[in-house]
Length: 159
Figure (cartoon, rainbow, N blue to C red):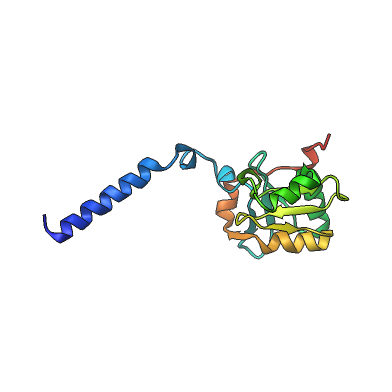
């Protein structure tokens, strides 16, 4: 075998090895777009400036265009977590919390967004929360957004 053929064989073997060692739960060919983007903040690329949060619980997108809507989104979709757990998570963050809005149930209801690089960003008051969530947003096309079902905060009960 010449050098070029050996390189091709090595690349093929390496690729096969990576695919063979990838856990099946990491392969996403059967996930819906909402499941793939679960926990992400999406910013529509049109002039509308619409912002959406894809709720990990139901893989639907929820709109927020104002600080008031952002506050309501946090109230309805936030995950209640004990203060000691939030402090512990700052050291070792469980992957299931990535992309979640968490609410500290023991510290005046302070809310945080857990980014996908494991940063815990305080959301503060509604104006700050609106800015923080938009700052972590990813721009997507209207065509891509249409593939994700729209959720309604009115249909979600906190009890």
